[in-house]
Amino acid sequence: MFGFLKKKTESGVGRQKPQSMADRGLLVFENTSEVIQAENVLKKAGWPVRVMGPPPEIRTGCDLVIVFPLIEELNILRELDSAGVAPLQVVPVTAPLLAPVDLFQTKDFGDYLMVRAANMKITVAKGSLKIVNISGGGCPDVPYLAQAMIGKSLAEAPRPRELGHTLCGYALDLAYEELLRKC
Image 1 (tube, rainbow, N blue to C red):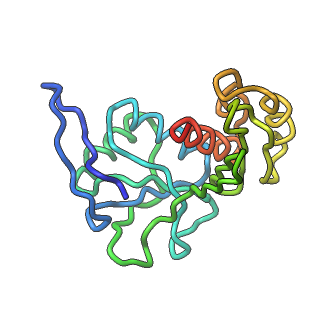
Image 2 (image 1 turned 180 degrees about the vertical axis):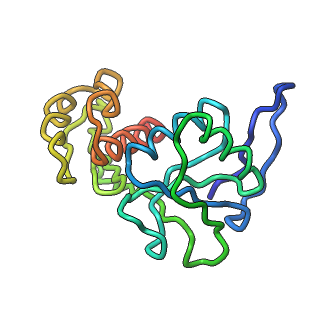
């Protein structure tokens, strides 16, 4: 699922990390805003992290967790503490029931490709890469995001993360990024 993840060292050479979820931990936060802040801090510092859905056993209200290399827990917690973004809890992935949930689902409709991230969906025409539909979510910024993006190509459309500040806007940005990777 993760392949080999690398953290840049001072010499610029990355250390290889194993693929197994057994060496992963989950950072659980109170709300989506904290997840976004923590992800930004950790990615800027070069940590190999990934935002996913929490397993039901540890869901606290926020529908996102950050998956990180468990061996680096102390360093990552120090990084977050210095940025003022401390998680509610750190949970090692020790059992299949604690495995995080992949946020992405892709559906190919022939001429169209749809990516779903959490509760948000974005659909593009494969030929032109124009955004033809945005749907899902119940956040107040979804109609605004749809209006700002539909009819534009992936390259022309504004990043959902720049316009929205809700879980729906964040999920739409993840779907947008996934479409960029696939197209």
